Length: 232
Image (cartoon, rainbow, N blue to C red; front, top):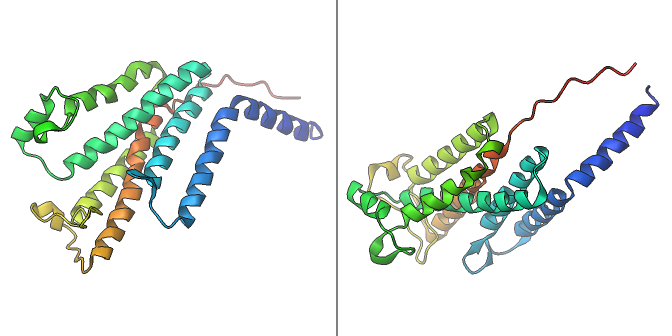
């Protein structure tokens, strides 16, 4: 029995590689981008696209595909659901980030009833964003609430609270912090230079981008495994 163990292990590895080859390739690509970003002198892959964004969005797509693969979902179905999951992650972060600047009840109603597809007249297309987000639940039969989903959601909530409570520093030109609501003074951070604001903004942006990964964990559904007979 013991002599069979290495052979069984090799068979299991081969089977796993055959099943998860696509996710493995994507994972290696994400790892490569992550390593490259560490040595890059810029936070941006291209104009308007952060490394943190590219990594988080790609990771959401890859994890969704992986979780669905565990449920033996067909390749094409996995691709469409993974795309929806990635879009939901992008939208979820944009909603959280946007309303981190504060919102009045009147403006919220205006955003929710704005039927345009842009940001005309100061409105945020909340209705369209929510429609995009809920489209992910077309795959509800592959979903379940789970501990990893709850943990990641709590982490994202804490990250955003600390960011906002530290003055919600932004790396716009010029860099600035918010001070028009008491919540922004929660941690009483004193920013002495513009460079300090940019550093804080970059740090909080990177860690809060984990919010964009949350939709993938809706699909982290554990399948019941039938009991196996003991090998004599």
